[in-house]
Length: 236
Image 1 (cartoon, rainbow, N blue to C red):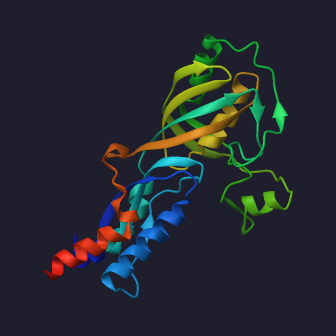
Image 2 (cartoon, rainbow, N blue to C red):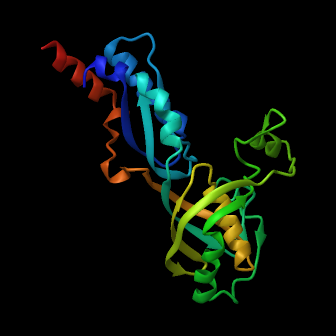
């Protein structure tokens, strides 16, 4: 891949590593490109944030393709993950400690499968307090860090498909296909309430964004040597 192609526009399919932020990935690729091709600047951006504790498909656009980020973000997304029932955390995931416990003895496979039905279609979802949503110019996670919990406005999202793949209480594995703006952490929290218990997300992996599939992801762009080799090849 030559520097002209990168500047003209390209999309890298990255399988985001665990504990990396989406911006970690963007910054790493930008730095690798700049160093390999001796560029002062290059436009690089991602099309849809993944939380640090999530893995899976992240689209990273360069050059003129950064103008297509909104287009990619608007596409349907597919995730697989695991919900732990009977407990909750303030962040709805593993980023914080378990804070409340709930009974799970009453939960049957029938109850679990039946509960998924109420989430199918267009629904209203409240974003987590620990999220980047802005209220009066301030991020919710900033307020949460200050110990505040404020009323959030529900947002309309669409769940196209939500199915349970494995049940091994207190853990439940799932696959979900959803619209832009869906918080899977909120889905896990709300699912816990739907089975008259509690729940939080213990694992999350994004497998698809529109027609892009994580099976086609290649993380070579995270290695500086890839661009250096490409740059050397061009000079030969």
